[in-house]
Amino acid sequence: MKKLVRPSELELQVLALLWDGGPATVRALQEGLPDGKDRAYTTVLSVVQVMEKKGLVGHTQQGQANVYHPLVKRGQVLKPMMKDLLRNVFGGSPARAIQSLLDGAPVGADELARIRQVIDDAERKTGPPEKGEQR
Figure 1 (cartoon, rainbow, N blue to C red):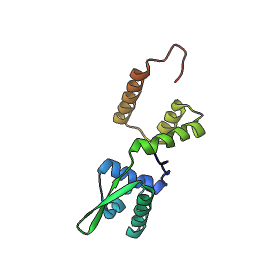
Figure 2: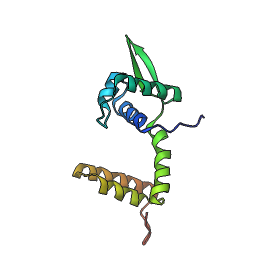
Figure 3: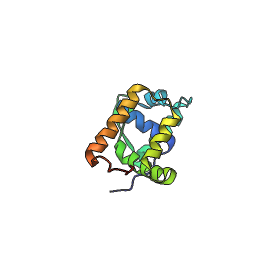
Figure 4: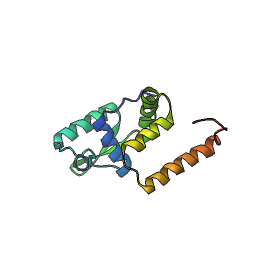
């Protein structure tokens, strides 16, 4: 299997839109970019064309428009990035990474409940920590 090219920040935003919202035109991607920057249509088109050359997205033609879809799964892209971030920034500690996330953004009750559910699911997979053990 060919090694996955690490997407740029803008490419990650495009991929997130496609993963969450499904196939989209360049215009829809341009309007949905979460960073809020005002980018020209041609800029987004160029980025998507580069992503296609990298094997990150593909397209089908619907009428006059190209509709882009992801060729990579979220986990394929994010797992290696998160692994590197965890190792390089947080010394391999998931707890330090989660604490940093919680310190860096407001977290509502619904989101905390989802985080607890993720932790509960992980604990069911690996078993509870032993007395005095930290995860």
